[in-house]
Image (cartoon, rainbow, N blue to C red; front, top):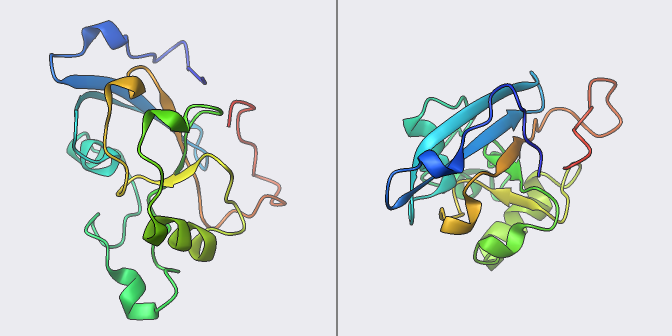
Length: 149
């Protein structure tokens, strides 16, 4: 998994019933930390409580796909799990899969998920998730994700 050694959150520092993880912003190359993600809340809820700057237009409540009909407004909380780690979360439901297919099809990967739809689990302790910029297609000059994503 991708870890920035200068800003790593020690998973052993997590309070009981919580985990620690980080977000790597692919647009700015900054890392944000969540030291108290509660088991069972969504990844986006934990991020918002810790002032991680997601562009979640709906505020994490969903439903914008109903306004446009195609889920295209629902790309602000798109994240990449580290490669080969999506098994620590429940699989995407049909709504999330459809939204990923329509809203982020240009940058979707096997480890793509919507942070608003994934509940925090103990298995995420110490992870670094990538915050995927929806406006940067893969061929963009600034698109330079770490190899771990």
